[in-house]
Image (tube, rainbow, N blue to C red; front, side, top):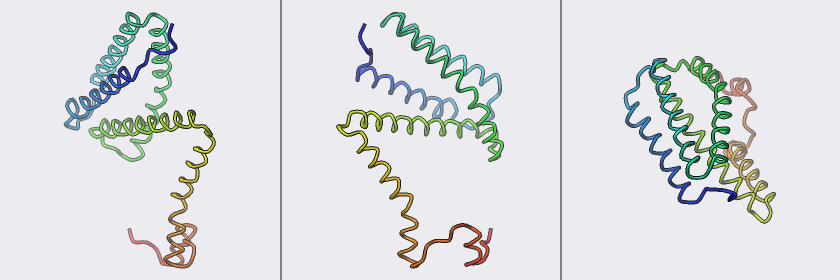
Length: 180
């Protein structure tokens, strides 16, 4: 059995399919913001589960039962772990008072952002793992983060010649309260 069945062509096709489904979801099926009913959410859950089962069946026939079982196992674990996210979404939507008709769009872009960040970290991890000195890349990433985070302090010192206030209370003591 080969170590992987993934090839650049398969990964490209898989990525194109995911992008197409995301575009279909937001660009066509949910173009107009509306409140998603429990019935609609259940129906879409069944559609995505059926699509995953079809993918597992394809794996079974094309690559064998081992790969299909690995996919179904991973899918079930991800599905179980995603349940707690529903509660996080409810808390965030409640806190920010996101109207029910806009929640799907906010959720979509949040998931899209998470996918982009996950891909970026996977690529960075792959580059790091293949580097001659993986610690050097991590050190450079930390250095870039430090430069980005400390820039406001450096700029403030250059402009005012003094360090920035340590918080809102210090700022209000020096400059008066901010108007709302």
